[in-house]
Length: 187
Image (cartoon, rainbow, N blue to C red; front, top):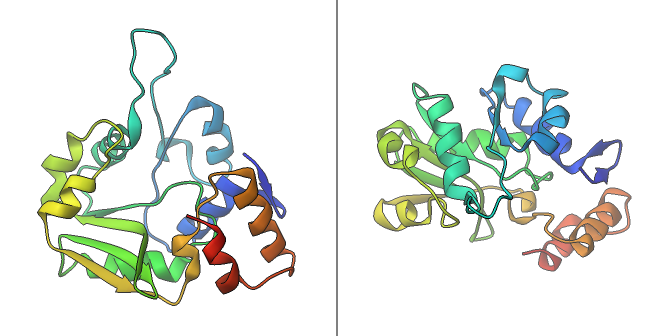
């Protein structure tokens, strides 16, 4: 929900995804759902169950991926892009989507470094639909041939996990630094 220019980090990420003209599904919590609905249709927002009771374990990235995939079971593939990656350009998302025609798993990379989005072809539906926990789809990346799609987009490496990350990104957006130089400041 943190501001980044005139939008939030999440809204910026979603606007880039929508600009691809690919269908977009947002898997999120109730606290971010309204913000997502300002960018995508309400029917394209999948709410995660409330976590916080002692009896319920954290759901993790695997559960989120499974929720998104099962919301669109007839898609010809799925791209996973965390909502805290506002610098990923639409062309990078489209390039990874195109790679799924020939590869079961594809991911964006910049200067040889693996980033996001990560894409999965429809043939992996059964495995994606049953994911759970924090591991996400990491085991699928190890099990199936993965194809790196080299993109001229350092944004595929930049996520906003900390206040320092956000501050550095705001400096870049405000003209205080070059994105390619700032990339080393992020995970």
